Length: 405
Figure 1 (cartoon, rainbow, N blue to C red):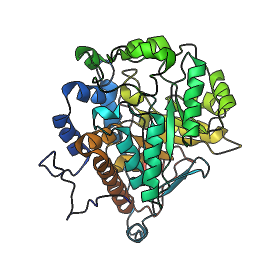
Figure 2: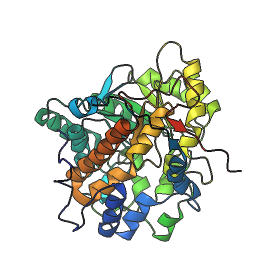
Figure 3: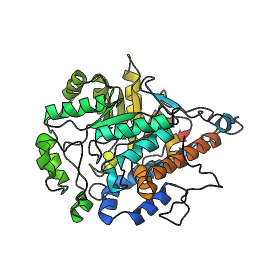
């Protein structure tokens, strides 16, 4: 189900590159060589001076693991499901605690685009969150996902839909209804984008979608004009169509039009985590939008413990899932996030690098690299099962750095 095995005798080496690809950075560099500068910069870049972009990665490196020894961890060698995780109060099961984050415009990396990514999600037995800004229609992604599930019947993969609540509520409601009808199992509402951040690389490159592509799910009715002649005046689109008046009351509106679980993406403070719990959400993604919105904000892993503490203290009726994205490049990063209370992690840019290098197979290989690294880290740290740092300020598995100020 999980595609190519990445053991010592069969390491990923694709026709597009002569190098053996051992880790996420290898895929990053191979993708950089293949993609146009405009596309690569769009995927890679962050806001302003990209300080937070680098901090998302560096903050993980400052957290130190505390491995335990002489622990029988043989179950990880014998049980392929030893790292599986159940999410959304039993509604979702993944082969290990990694989900595919929503990222825009996959067809710039691979002609089959989001369809390749959906197929890879099935093969890797995980969930894919489809971006509203995808270059493939919701229904086409769902059809590819369903076909792949028939070919890999043991997979429990699901599709979730990332949603921007637009000024045009009728259009937003139609998007939600389309996703629900197509079989998507959850809504992931982005809450940190009243406008897009200052992404200077895109402005320097005069970023635009290629002529044969469009934002398929937004190319509808009154939103046609926003895309014009395929020029990606993306900030213009955001300014015209995202709603700057959004408040937590809009989560209630979303509840009224859909029965799907609601996950809010973009929480970075304890105060907003508290409001999210009060809004009765089903999950929270600790996220700074891949450092593409506000520069010099905290990295996501730095704020995770505070948010976990508040959410776990407040939740009563149901468990609220806590996810995290931003800067996760190694299996050690995944273990650190789980040790600090996350239920699962989301990866975005690494998926795009795999997609650019080898389409569906490249995505599968990237996930397999992280799976292999994560399971190895679990064994070397003496973890027989997934850590749960949710009931303590800092798990005994990790040591947080002292303040650098």
